[in-house]
Image (cartoon, rainbow, N blue to C red):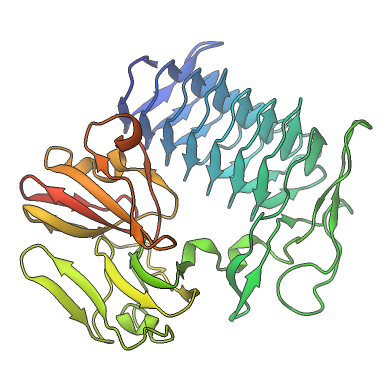
Length: 420
């Protein structure tokens, strides 16, 4: 239906249906730095199909009732697939073949009869996290297949739901839990540790261990079935006691390093938990929090001052720590906007997953020229982003959630959120 061969293309808001056998609603060939957002692909042989097309983003798309939902072939590396519903496809919701370093996060994948959720084939160094993978039919494929030499993939904070089949592994090694500890909240208590996945216990195929200490992590490891004898056994060493939605993980916690931190809140905060008082537990060595406005300059925050998305804040911490955020659960709300003045502005990034500067600043594409982040760990500014540039200063590089950024505006403009 649509064929993309140019770098930096943006395709958004289309419904793509009834592509013939072997065809795709959207085909991408040898193109990089593209954004595909808010697409509805239905009744196609393939929904969105990338061929030798690295460094692209697929955001908030729906690919249902196709043969496959999203295909990555022939070195379609460094692709972000997030916020997508890829369900009821005859084969798989996501098929990655010979494509690595991709991020499949915050997606819903429900298999059709005979269909699976994700297949990693000869694909390495991918991240699979915060997904719901459900293959409800007893005759269906596995929720996740890892095969043909797929190694060093990291899989954690996913719900594996199935009437019979969860995972098949014919490759390795891979990590079936987080490779680093992070803070999470479970049953109203904060913990720091490694986390794995939720393995639904249906027909005796899922996790059956106990959680005696109540930290939300199973006390015994979960052994994954490895079908070929040449591969070593693989384990989820920190299986979740409940579905990942019962945990408050990375998306709700701001990590602070020792020293100055340039931070932002990625979404609208819940009433009563939306002021600078959420940082009251941070030891700031007598220093206040600061914000900056291009018109009024530096401002000192009081405990009752509101924290808003698209704003950035400076926070000092005497020691590394984390700050828990509580997001507004109201789904009926207008995404935030903010007017930026000519000159330097301190702005926040709305979103829970890394996104390119090009897409974050799409609403001010004609006004912004330069953006700079701050590395709290090193206590120094990072390599800048230049509007329209490639390479080390390219605007295709990612902005990180929870971080603040300086943005220089050639003229005033209206910055719109990319997340509610």
